[in-house]
Image (cartoon, rainbow, N blue to C red; front, side, top):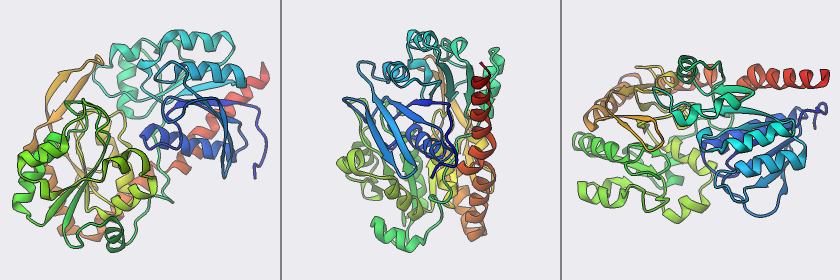
Amino acid sequence: MNPKRRDLKIIFHSDAIWTQSGYSVETDWLVRRLLLEGFPVAQASKAGLGGHWIDYTLPEGIVRMYPSVNDPHGSDAMFFGARHWGANVAISMIDIWVIPPEWINHLHEIGCKWWAYMPVDSNPVSPNVLRNLPLADKIITFSKFGQEQLKKEGFVAEMIYEGVDTNFLKPMDKVEARKKAGFPENAFIWGMIAANKENPPRKAFQECMEAFKVFNQNHPDSYLFIGTQQISPASFPIHDYATYLGIRDKIIIPDQLFMSILATREDIRFWMNAFDALLHPSATEGFGLTIVEAQSIGKPVVINKAHSMPELIVEGKTGFTAIPDRKWWTNANSYWEQPQPMSIYLAMQNVFNLLREKGAQVAIDCRNNVLENFDIDTIFKERWLPTFEKLQDEMLKV
């Protein structure tokens, strides 16, 4: 039941809220909380929706959903939805460099503000990203790293961390989770949950598999779960590479059709509860929501010491960093930084030793880190709600 009806109409430009990307998960959590506060909310979708607009019913209220027409990233839907629905502010929660500037200009022509809630995943910031920022009425970035990089480029940005629903992502009985997931009961299981859509892969599948091979030689009763799907011919060939490394019997890979269509957030929660630790040393991250999700469930993480990722863990207590030693320029006009497999392996061994020495305290430390810094209800109440209330007050004064 909405406590009061707000006049500010907000349209999000992101992945459809029922899909499984980090953008869609974060959008979903924000949309639900805004509905509970009485704000009218719509979404322009860049993925997971086709055809005519629909009113999508959630337990918290109704969301007007606008599909992309011709633009593969939903920029046209952002404008057409804002114009049709009468939005006051459009918030792009995607890689903003994919948005043609003319769609942002069209928003301003109809009196709709454009906010960029954006990742920064390169040092220096990609010129592709900088292109659209002068058009933004407000810039909000996911991390302190992003805020500092934008400051160097002359842009003032607020920083609001992405958050997770700690009531949903909480520790469960690991034995029960492993039975449900079909994992070996007493093995040490590393987990990876990441999109597989580039080659070389941004999520470091090759380096992680090579690092795991060394780990498995020292800990034979260990497995690596890789929850992903090969999205395109450009995806990294995980099955073939596992066979090449001679570790195919140690790699757990879910059915690809299931991962592409049927996997839910509930499945991901069970998988994470069945892991001992998460492996996530990406070549680049604008935030790294999976890193926070794993800690919310009580699992330590191996990350890459680059970009926003070090902000998300407590080094030596909730995870360890691998050190990047390669840097290359990508077709997105940005730098990626990647650690070598041996550096990843050493961080994996540190996590293994930490769990052996500290036991259950590691899960408590992981959980507390998230509750203190990344709980979505706290972030919404302390950061997002005042931001939208301020905009509504400004709108009423005009």
